[in-house]
Image (tube, rainbow, N blue to C red; front, top):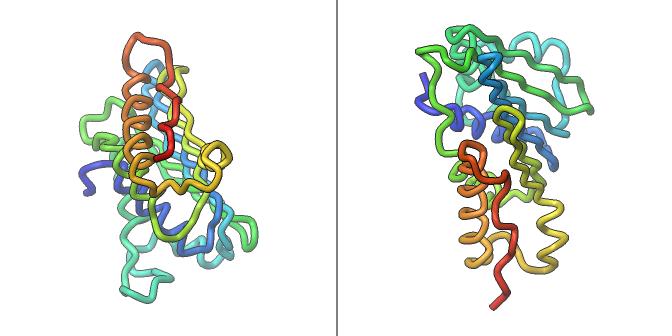
Length: 195
């Protein structure tokens, strides 16, 4: 079992990138009143045909050339089902893929969400350029990061610029924390000056 759900998210995003996705949306919805945690990753990659979709949660099936087993989705499916939830995958050739994992939020075996700021930094600073929209909701409070909006504001300054990397990590950390404290939702959105 994976110790943090954020690592499952990283694995799904890796699948999306290998499928040629250029836009990925990551949604995390924590509804404590309904005792549900839902993770959804949507991409605009090449998608899967019906036969691949049918086999994708089989641990002995993988489209990767680097190994003969594909454990990411089968493990996520087992983890979700063990925690009173389920895994659903919607995909079609040329139409991208949506992976949805649902969990009973309070289930004793549910892994913690983990370090989402660190996981997002891994995705955002990857060599392969990808636009990411990240939405995390907790009981109606919402934190959103959209790299397209961020890149529009930054102009020619890359996300990998040292000052931007530092600001981005702090922005993500504050945004995640704001979902759980009593202060107004959202984080300081003031970008650092270039230099």
